[in-house]
Image (cartoon, rainbow, N blue to C red; front, side, top):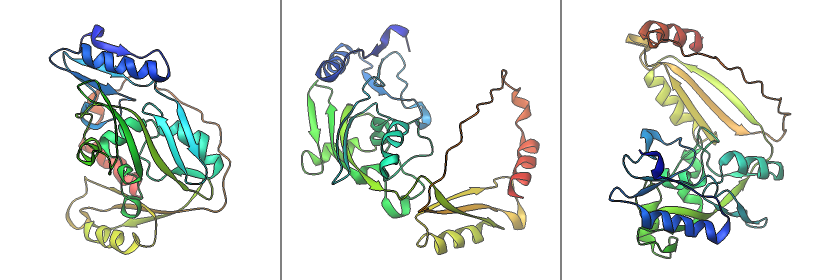
Length: 267
């Protein structure tokens, strides 16, 4: 991607949305695609020889309804920003991906899910409407009632229908900032699947780690984590970030080192 094909947004409100429209209109034959915090699988925000629109400046929380839990915000708002603002109020997004460094636009485009997908579904299941700038430059408000075909094509559409600039979705109640976690070590794949089937109705959150290097009788062994919201919160310690000032050679990551790590982790 050429550097001069990246369009940065620098204004607020309606002027910013107009900037998105102008960027789409000015895009060449390769078109334009939105970029948030660049955590999508498969480098979905890359557009070789085309335009990439940086939506991070679209980061306003526009409105919050404390009765319904509905939030209106711009597409560049991240899960981290939402948690910082609403978790102290006892509210969280109904579904959160594995990292908080994901924007709401990206959440819609990938229809993200969390560790509670078996109970609450995906992000799109809690979405009221989307404001989408389509390739013709128009801003359309989409919902399951207004232009439903385009709405459902955009939810999980990886940005192929246009650029999401704003949305409204519903938060859910959380009794605290903590979870009650149960960790189970499972001997093999059949046991893992049985444990998931048995425990999913009992726990709103479930996630598993499988040792992909195990073989024979231990094929598919792993760790199943089950969690429920805790009524009692915890204090959050200050983070201490340790950085490694160099990259290890790729040969360090091989079947022997991975197998050794997996063995220690499983124990």
